Length: 119
Image 1 (spheres, one colour):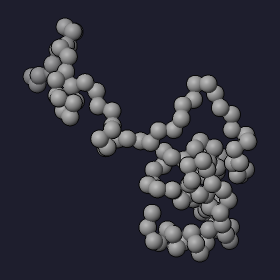
Image 2: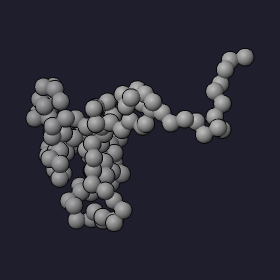
Image 3: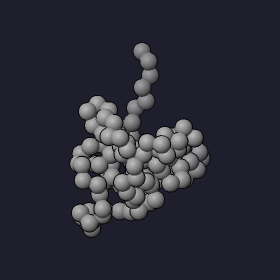
C-alpha cells in the first residue's frame, strides 16, 4: 500500500468494518459512484494479499450484497479449512516430485508415456 492510497482513504474513506485478519473496509464518504456502484475498497493489514479477504467481505466488496458483514450470518461447514495465504513464488510453495527445485528427478514413466518428437 502506498502513500497515495493511504491519503485517499484518509480524505475520502468511511470505515464500515474490519475482518478477523485485521483488514479494514471502506466506502467513499460522499457516496461517489463508479460504474453505477458506490466505491468500496480494502486496506490490508500487512502484505496486500487478495486471498486474505474472507468470502463474506469479498461478496460485499464486489457488490453482491449491500449488507456490511458482521460475522453473525456466516455459516461454517465441517469441510471448510482455515485460510492459508497464497504461497506461490515463496520458498514454501508446493513443488511436485521432479520439480527442478526439488532435485529434478521424477519417477519413471509407467509405460504409457511416449514423448512427442517433431516430425
